[in-house]
Length: 202
Image (tube, rainbow, N blue to C red):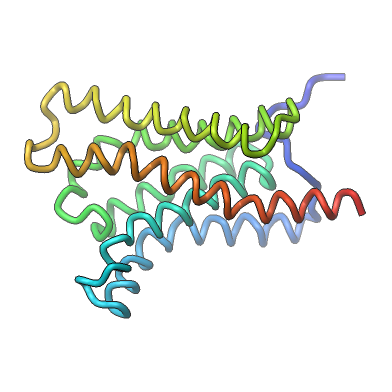
């Protein structure tokens, strides 16, 4: 029997209808949260509020949760590609999260896509195929994602792509913020993992 493709692994099988609903919700989250949540937070709490100033953490945590849930529940590379590419495009086009740096963030798209793919792939490979511990898998995937994204930033920065006045903020956004949001996403997504494990046992 041919070995199952890693990207076709999921914790459980869903009916076709549930699968469509699930991927539609995940894609909507990936597309709409980066575009509208930041503006919504600003309008509700005010532009200078603590919540608004941390909107990147909030948006990033939700996106990382969506990526991990995709790894746990979604099969097929076409669906996965949609989820890993939508957030960065949406974030940059909306211009809210990175504000004046949004134009320069376009250079980071390949590294962000690769980092997002890494976290999905490693969850499927290590957790679903190799049966690693959930949190050990998560830390491995997060370290890999951050290394890819920060590595991409460092290479581009070495070529002088980014203005000096933006480098410090972008450096933080592509390293510390990426790690924090991915860890929060891992913790939130554990509820989906736990629920799946419980339903499988029953």
